[in-house]
Image 1 (cartoon, rainbow, N blue to C red):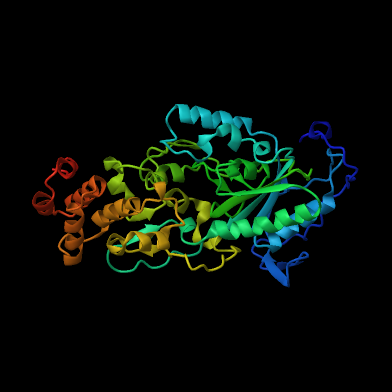
Image 2 (cartoon, helix red, strand yellow):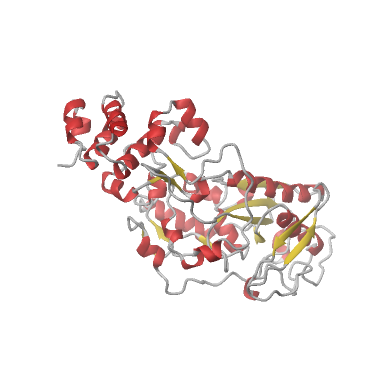
Length: 432
């Protein structure tokens, strides 16, 4: 807890010695709901599932060490976030995340970032909210859930898309956070909204806001809900009430995520070697490491394996109470045909998948991934597959020739490589 003197506050707002109005306790398994009236600017009411927060992680406390905290504003901030669609809302201090900064620098120095930039790019910035908003005092953190049962796989070669990448989750998250920011602005406070942004390590902000704990796969786990969430924050200079206690570790001795990783990328609890992580490798520039192509399987974008095996993400848990995200024209579903991707032109590919992180916005990396998935899921004797392989083996793009040759090798079609690929790039990447 940060004492008021270090906050530099001169406001006359009083500190109310009470927590905001809390819903009565609900018995486990109850389906009762809390109807929250909309705040000004929103219309109607919305019935939201009640969340079961453990008492040790309550975002509010009866004791008050902030002599200038407006609890009424905090209550409205929490309510605004929930009525706007957020599954969980908490508040963290805007003090720098010094331990996180040291971890980022240490892991980058050891090469574990694997070339990933994002919050590694400028750790001094991504671990200090005041670098984004001068005078920042609080960080309002929101979690938006997703999940649901896995759709049935269509016939033929198919590429699987990670759950978070199937819909514009971050678009919905930004809208909800925007409502929180608007409320604070209307009260005269400054705000900056960050979501899917390298300006802030959002998981650490969420951990400090007592939304959850770190799993061994380094994802944040919410009590009773697991990790099917995207996170975002509103940085503000408002001195909001902070969570006093963090959520304790709920993983205990469980190591299923570590044991379930296809490439062994979780090298120790909480530490991921990005050089092996499939979710990063599909986003990285250059050639996909040959030693991990089979492990990629049918994953064409992202990897959910360490979350799929987590007991807290069991279907009967992850589906309960999750707010359904709105539909968008750009939603792509769970499966995509690698053959269709390989036949599509640049414009079509970017229209369908441009919301994903694509290195340099270059669609050839989508084709690179599609070729690997084709090699892992198709039948080499299929005429359509053969025609696509011949086309890419004849390409002038060495990157695509290399991965087409690898796919042909996996499908037992070395004859196509010998016939079509005359350069060393393809033959050097064909297994004997």
